[in-house]
Image (tube, rainbow, N blue to C red; front, side, top):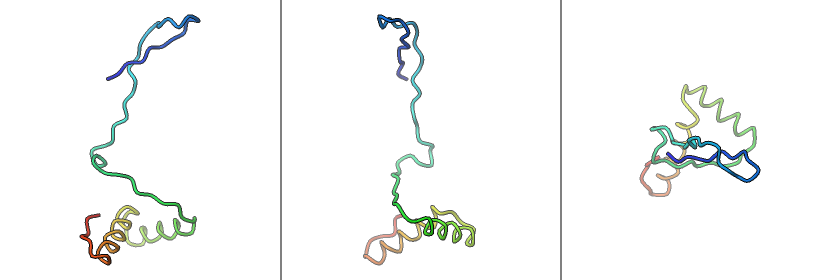
Amino acid sequence: MRTVAILSDKDGTAVGTTPKPTATAPPSRQGKKMISGHFTKDVHRQLKMLALEKDTSIQSLLSEALNALFERNNKPPIA
């Protein structure tokens, strides 16, 4: 863990140190990358409603959609 000097004197003398927080991804996100896009609020609302109707998550719906795209383009469904 790295530490950061806390400076309060006019001459910049360190008067104490504190550990700098490190951001770590939860285990479920390790080794994964965020994929995103900008869509209208109507697209967002419809996706949320579909997830509720199917009792699933937006993440699962996006995974299903990506796999369908991959298969249509002769790629393995890996999402």
